[in-house]
Image (cartoon, rainbow, N blue to C red; front, top):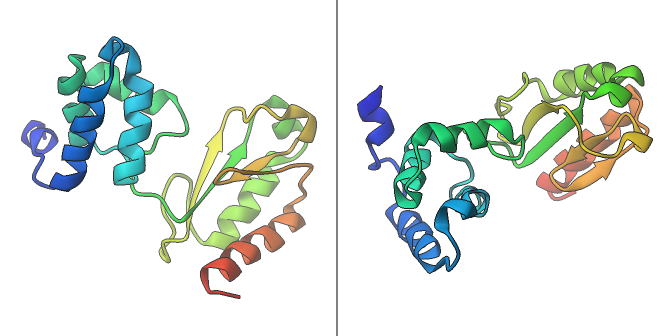
Length: 170
């Protein structure tokens, strides 16, 4: 396992170079820029596999455990490839009380996937997150950066249909 984590050969060399240039250009304390570097890396690679986390740790002179702790703490970072549409379902207290689990179950059924795994068609990744910060709109989901609130399970059908329509040019 250790050798697999250290193996950078699976990463795109041009993207690694772009990330290196970005890190080298940081003027402030590089260690303090970890979140920004992780965002940049995820925008380049689409996700943050273990070997990329190791690369970032070495470039910032941080432990790989520290980098992984940040990646796994924040719900907007992904260690695995994600679908075109990342749907985050808030399961915090306000959303849970107002039926978020039923909304989540409906989304999983319609996308034929499980939490934190990409659907077979590559369109969807479904996440349950602790809080989106829009408790007044509970239950709430986001589809990429778009927020949908006051949802019922039946509302999900149209949202999923819209995503599929956009993907198929309808």
